[in-house]
Length: 75
Image 1: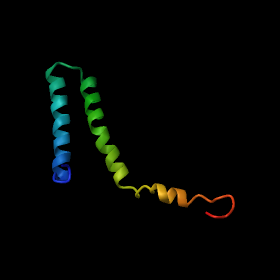
Image 2 (image 1 turned 45 degrees about the vertical axis):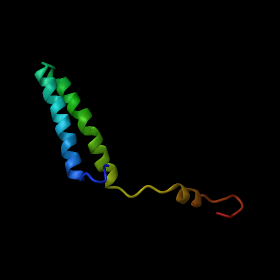
Image 3 (image 1 turned 45 degrees about the horizontal axis):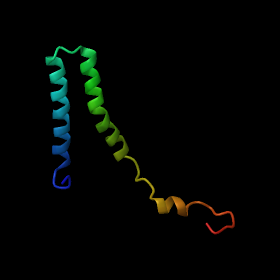
């Protein structure tokens, strides 16, 4: 299902959900630190995905196993 949804729409929905949760916490008379914590917790996964997405692709298991040198020189 996620292949039919654009990344922009999914990211916008994520931030809208975080904004809704923070707005609800403010409306419920939560402290500013609680609302800030909710905002950081909501934004952190997106930041991690952006950081990981810009790096090189992870090696596959076959690439990792192939790069190991066998003691008898087979690798």
